Length: 117
Image (cartoon, rainbow, N blue to C red; front, side):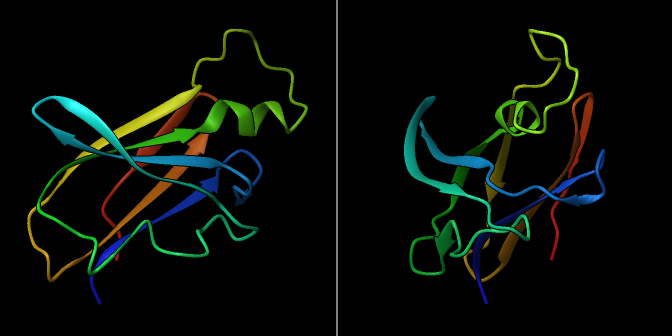
C-alpha cells in the first residue's frame, strides 16, 4: 500500500487530537501549491489518505498542522501569542511504491514528528 497519511496525538491530555485542520502543499521551484485540506477525526486520523497511491508523486511536500486552534478549543490557560500555533513539516517523497505516514505528537510547548508505518 502506498500513499500519504497522518495522525495526531495530544500528549498533554493523552488523547488523539480530533478536529485539527491539516493542509498539504507540494513545493515546486520554491513555490507552495495547496494540494488538499483535511480535518482529523475522533481518532486523530484522517478519514481518507492525504494522497492515494495514484496521487503520489516524487518531490517535496509540506504539511501545516493547525495546532493552535486545537489547543485554544481545549479551554486551557495559554499565553497569546501561543508558543506553537502552526506546525510546518517539510519532507520528501522519493519512492512511489512506499507508504508515507506522518505522525505528530504534540503539546502546547513541543512536538515530535517522524515517519511512521
